[in-house]
Length: 70
Image: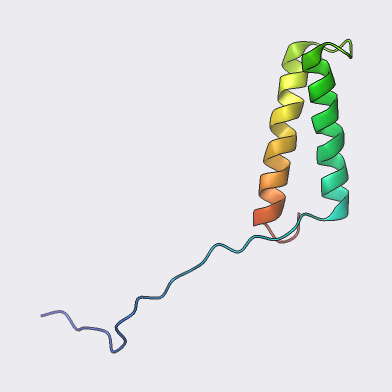
């Protein structure tokens, strides 16, 4: 027979979000604007590079809010 724990509530790990550092925010804004202007055709950039810049900017913001040192 399995033993029951003494406390009735299971431990919960909550998701802790942090604001991105200033440097990370600046890099992601530059990448986002580069990608946006490239997709809209305002910069002579291949669409693949512009789309990749948008994806990297979004991923960088998400990771920087989840990870402590980024």
